[in-house]
Image (tube, rainbow, N blue to C red; front, side):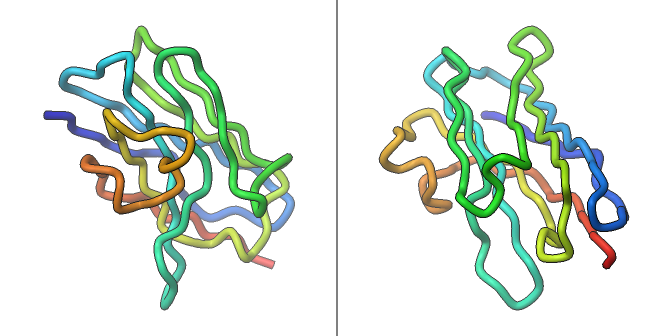
Length: 126
């Protein structure tokens, strides 16, 4: 079992920055993929970014590429999402997720992930 706890959300003006953290407890195998998803009001939960635990390979949605950076600290069992140049359309609840068997072909699919955090609200004002 894996437990995930997000932190770092808040209110920021457009153009500002925030860093989200996702602390994982339980057994994190090197084969795990961890990801960030987000859900805006009235919309489906969508993929934002993912990282492989073994070698730190990163993957991004086109909507955040160049503005967001995903990273992980294997010692602390913590994943981060550095969000720069934030836009009002980035407003959403951000969730971290973990999955042992996701692959680059499947990691963008929310249904592939078995473990989820409770979410943290990010609000970007214009």
